[in-house]
Length: 474
Image (cartoon, rainbow, N blue to C red; front, top):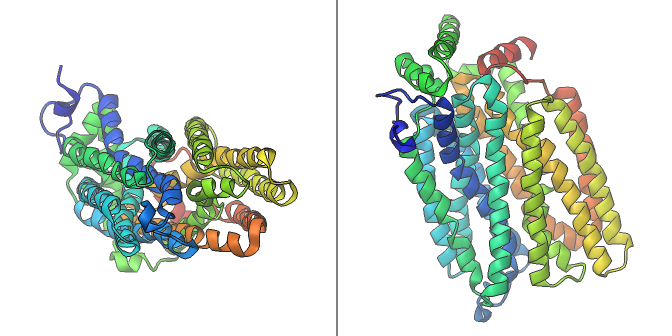
């Protein structure tokens, strides 16, 4: 029996894999190393910041509220550029090669942040790391969505979100363990250096996974696409059916083929792009990353100590992983719209509850745990009903001809919204106090209305069927 690595020839040539599920599992596992790095890099800053704020002579970088926001937001601004650039690269050179290039940036960025001697160089290194994070966030869901069939697409793409929150959980656990065991103010450098590991795994893994069959078909390489699909599907008939569907779509597109620039001006495509951008706003202005980046700081404001706050933050990661597993189950059974609206409703209630706890309860241990409870309820529904649906929709909303570009653009805007929240949150909290959480609640009411009135349902359709449906309905 061939080994998993041997069976995963880059373009699907040679002996056919007798276990399509195994090859899909390997491909998804490799691709989601980018998501693991994404999660770790965004989560580890929560554990590193309390030590980085110490003066330089005590092992920190002497951060204040402004430099704290800059360092946190630098990765996110880089991610906006990375997701936009990766959209072009993945359309031009393929999803797999793009992931390989991004893995090198993951490694370089992790080493740069771990060794940065000043705030300026830390911001630069975090920006480079952000390019990799953003590129991975745009490319990984598309790659998984294109190798999965209609029945498997929802749970497989949702594994991208599972790996993101697993990376965040890993970051929280390592932060707490290092703080408890190493007793050194310079441990934040070790925390950041570990981010290179998933980058190395992604780099190695890209040499053992197939190219995207839909990208191959889009480039006119239908024989290669069929060879890959025969190894990814349960039967040759299933592979042939998919290739025939792609050929039919390609033939129809050629009859009315328009250059990509003209396609981008068509009303239905612009509406899809605006919906994608709106979904990014919806996901980020829930305030999720205010909690992911700043939960230790929020809890410290209630009187909790640094080590206790870092340990309590592990709850964020545990709840996020459990919620994502529940989301993978739910997303295969319920519509995208209903999950999003359920999640947003509970998010609004959790934000109102958190603001009330912080404003009305006396500062003591009871307040600390009540605040943590509100955060965990928020994260349960955010990671179960909103985040996995967002990444799934990014893999399936846009037409094949410009899928990478539009996904990259929409995800790029999502990162800009993320950066806005990350940079503004500590400043807003400093200026307005705990009323900040009421502002989030009001914004989320608007997001709920946007989903209700604007988002089409895509459940149960192939990528080709979704494209036809969107062109007809929008």
